[in-house]
Amino acid sequence: MAMDLTYRPRRLRTTPAMRRLVAETRIDPANLVLPLFVKEGLDDPAPIASLPGVVQHTLPSVRKAAREAVEAGVGGLMLFAVPSHRDAIGSAGTDRDGILQRTLREVADEVGDETVLMSDLCLDEFTDHGHCGVLRADGTVDNDATLERYGEMALAQAEAGAHLLGPSGMMDGQVGYVRRVLDEAGLQDTGVLAYSAKYASAFFGPFRDAVESQLEGDRKTYQQDPANAIESLREVRLDVEEGADLVMVKPALAYLDIISRVAAEVDVPVAAYQVSGEYAMVEAAAANGWIERERAILETLTAIRRAGASVILTYWAVEAIRLLG
Ligand code: PBG
Image (cartoon, rainbow, N blue to C red; front, side, top):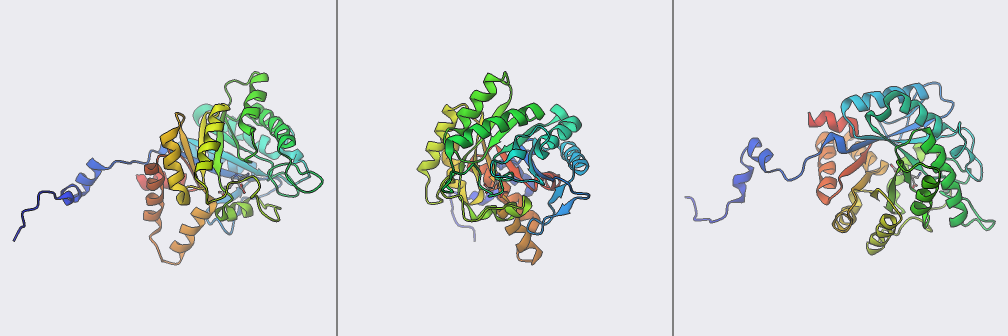
C-alpha cells in the first residue's frame, strides 16, 4: 500500500528521458582538450606502456592525430615534445627548430585556427636533470633565472603558432613575466593558460614515462603540497592579477574541492587537467575487468565539470566525444 509521502525525488529518475531532461551537467566536446606527445627522431609512433592507447607521435603522425581530433570536435590540443638532446638549460625548449616548435608549426599548418593550439611552457622535458627550471650550483631551482628561460620559450612557441601558452613550472611570477615578454614583442593576441594550482602529485607518473623524464627526486619546492587548499586560491589570484586568460587546476579528480573553490572565486574560465595517472588508474582497473571503462570515463569527466571546470584536458578527449554519441 502506498504511503502518504510528500516528497518523491525518485520521480525525476524514472526514465532515461526524464533523467536527460533534468541533468544539470553536460560534457560538451568543445570544452575538451587533447594532449599530444611528439618525440624527436622517431620513425613510427611508439606506445607508452603506462598510458595504454596513448603514443609518442612522429611529426607526420601528430599531424594526422590533430586532424582527426579536430574532425571529432575537440576544443583544443595541448602539445608536448620529447627532444633527442637535453642539457642543463633546456636549449631545445627555445631553439627555433626545437621539436616542440617544429610540432607547433606542423600542427598549425594542418589545423590552423580550426582549433585552439596550446603548448606546455616548461623546461622539464628539455633539461638533462628533469627539473622545470634551471639549477643553481647547489642544485636548487633558480626561480628568476628560470623566468628568463620561460620568456624565451614563450616567444619561440608563440612564433611557432601556439594560441595559448601553458606555463606549468610553478615558478613565482611566471604568468606576469611571460605576459610582459609577449606584449613587448607585439604578441598581444597570444594567451596564457596558467597551470595555477598544480600539486606535487603521484598522478603524474605515467606522463614522466611519456616524456622520458630524467628527474631524480621530486618537485616539492615548486609544486604545491596536496595538504593545502588556501594556497591554491592565492596562486590563482596572483595568476589572474598577472594576466592569466584561463587558470588551471591539476590533477583533477583528487582536487575537485580545489576546482570548486577556484571556480567560485575567479572571473576567468577554469580548466582542469585529468592527468596521466588518473587515466592509467581507470585503464588498468578496466583491463582487469574491475570497473566499467566507458562509464568510468564519462563519470570522471562529468564530476570534473560538475565541480566547476569549464575546460578539461584529457587523454580521452576523442574517445569521450565518441561515447557521448
Ligand atoms: C610539466 C608537466 C607535467 C604534466 C604536464 N605538464 C609533469 C610534471 O609537472 O611533473 C603532467 C601531465 C600528466 O600527468 O598527464 N611539463
